[in-house]
Image (cartoon, rainbow, N blue to C red; front, side, top):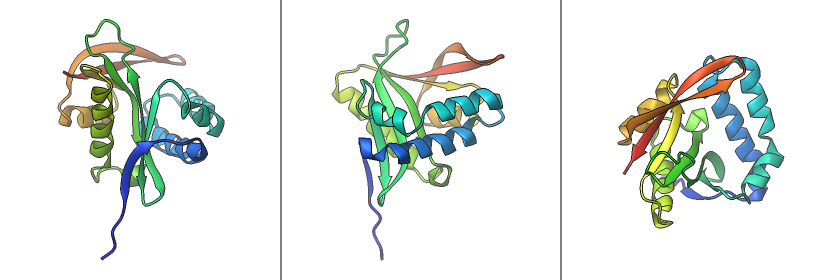
Length: 168
């Protein structure tokens, strides 16, 4: 029997191309048909290898889930940007390549991100997702999140509602 290694760890600058590819395929799959095509493509192209190389050194923490040497997903996290909420930590993004979804890696990556924020002294956690993204809303709800806040995001001419899930 073969053993496959799964590791959640900080992303490294030399992995920027792989992280950019995860971002591209996961965003196109997650938001195609929700975010208008032109704004979605602009957002994806803006986060190229150079952008992700800088992100590995930036103020937000970038975690990757490495499956047998392949970057299968990433999460970015840090202090909450929602000053009106009492939760101190925020997971800004959590995405997996489509072929790695549905097998528990998202729960592993989410759990590690949540634990890291707690170890850094953050009380509580918030995650925002688009209301029309049923997969994301279901994921955060099944992970124990309570949807207690909402806001709006603009994508070109389209205004989409976002939902804030919290954990105390």
